[in-house]
Image (cartoon, rainbow, N blue to C red):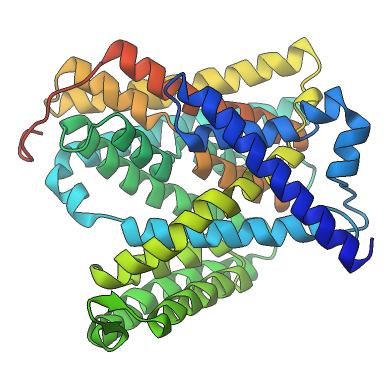
Length: 423
């Protein structure tokens, strides 16, 4: 394709992606599902799993996908644009990170987070050990340790952005359920990203490089919080005029996001790490407010759907074409749901939260959504998992996210608000 043809193809794909996301969103809204869940489903529908199955020639024309000729296919431009969307979104998530939410129900949040990390991680690692030795779900280059760490991290993650949207959608702000879930989700996600960082840094057999990667990541976090954050706090008033962030301030914020994403990618981690940490360093108040107001609408409405579409093009549910593979998928889903949901509910009860509210926390903590897709896309990109396991984990991510809202409504309903000291 020429550059003009690629441009025309991209805009046609963009229109198809956005229309599909909105149509699926309208259907999902009737079942109480947020738009982000609909976009996850829409991405899979546009890929080989449905559109490619129903109309393979049309799907191949709309989304040409040839990994051997990246200069002429969809991946050559959809991948970098989707990565930009991810980096911007994680930059916003970093700016929304609330330490005070964790502190207000610290004991319950820590207990729920610890239980919701340890139990699914151990069971996921055990499942990976079985898959590694008795199936072909991990490529030959993946070691047993990498497989166990990766699947364990995939099982224990909670999608903090989706969780926050569900809490807002269900009007749970100010309740024990909402506060403990958000706090536990924030702590758990931080730990899950650390696990993933270890997996990515050790994926190369050169342990010297792995050590440099881990040390570089730790140095980056320390530099951002000990050097960049205090400097930004002192300089923030120079980029605020008439109660608003100036254009120079917006450009500076985006530049820091880009540099953070670039650095963590260079040292062998992923762009999302750098963007999230840099977002957490942005001064709260006017700076964070105006940066989020400028980034979030475009990112959520335009760029994130491209990431879901990219994930969908990588997802081939048709690879699960035997009873054996669907049994594997069912086992993964059951382990994911039971290990996290039950562990979080029991931990919440142990800290004095009533049974119904504790079960509600377990249901919400099972949401994996966007963060799961980010992790498994990284795993597929780095060659840690196979396409079959990728498809299985996509199904797990979608189902655990889809089930949260209806299960919560049926089991919990609308809980009452509690004062901050209730848990």
